[in-house]
Structures are given as structure tokens and as C-alpha cells.
Image (cartoon, rainbow, N blue to C red; front, side, top):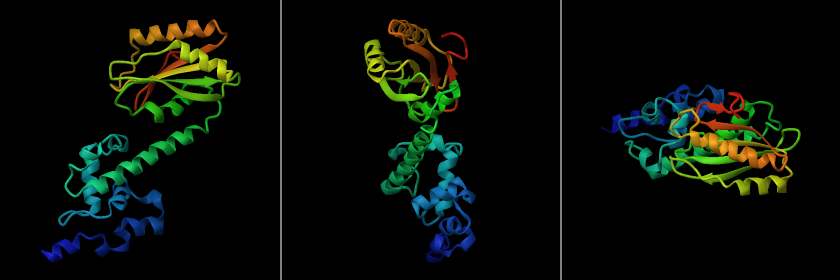
Length: 232
């Protein structure tokens, strides 16, 4: 039984099969998702290597890292071989990845199309399980002056305070707004409420000589642009 336990230890693998050594010798890009997660958790169980355990975890979310990032600590701990410490390590690493993507989006200094707006917004709200409404405030060169969460709600929708939006636009000296909210359900079809909120904010903005340039509905993998669909 001791020999069986020993055979599953990463220490007893060939250097080519050890994720840590492989990363040092060949670079991080050559490692599979399972190997990277195996480095995080460090060890498996008596009958399962860290890589095999990682493959099993990934298989449960169809090998989708975005879906893995949505698992709670409790859900991660439901896998045999994953205790609280390992679950926290996985969750922390995936959150760092999400935040890194958000910081990379800041490189988009000027919004030239709806895709640019989506790249900024997706890391913020694309993977949430509740709905949030955000505003991008732009200057006359379409550069983002500020990003602000206007409201946070349940799966059924959010409440939008037009006065707060306009007050902040004036304080920032913004001349353009991009409205955005997410649909946790994944649907890209705007609701009647979405359209009404858009028109309400558009009318209020026009009175202050501020333009609503777009309203983006964000999901995990795609987006819907009111401007692109000419319904703004």
C-alpha cells in the first residue's frame, strides 16, 4: 500500500512529467490547464495524482476556466482531495487572473467601437451571477475618464438613478456615456425595461449636452450593442 501511495507523488515522476520542473525548464505556456492547477494544489490523494485530480475538476466544468472561476469554496471542496486550503488557493489564483484581464483592458485608452467597450466591461461584470449596471464616462476624444457601478441587483434587474449619472457626468466633465449591464442568464436580447432605461438616460443626458453613445449588454462570452443594432 505504501508503494501505491509513493507512485502517485509528484516527487517520483520523471522531470518531464513534473509540472513545476516543466514550467521552469520549458516555460509556463507549455503547461496544460490541469498542470497549472496541479502546481497550485501541490498534491493529490493516495490514489490520484495532483494532475489527475486537476483534470477531474476541470472536466466537471467542461474544461472551461471561466466556469471554474465561478465555483465557490464549498463546491471546490466537494472534490475528494481538495480541502479548504487548496480550494482557497485555486479561487485566489483565478481571481488574480480575472483582475489581470481587467487591468489589461485599461490599455484601451480610446473607445472606437463597441468591442472596445466590451473588453473593458467583460472582466467587471461578464461572469457575475447577479445583475449590475455600470457607466463609462468619456471625454471628447472618447477616452474613458471613469468607470462607475451605478447599481447592483438580483437576477431580475437593477434600479438606475438618472440624477446620480448626470451629477457624475458634470463633475467629471464627460461629454459621452456608455451604459452597460450584464445578463447572468446569457441572453443577449434587450428587455423592454432595458430599452426604457436607455431612453430615459438618453433624454436626461441630451438636456445637459451629453451624448449616450451606446448601451452594452454583457454576457460571459459575447455582447449586444444598442448602437450597432441602431436602436439607441
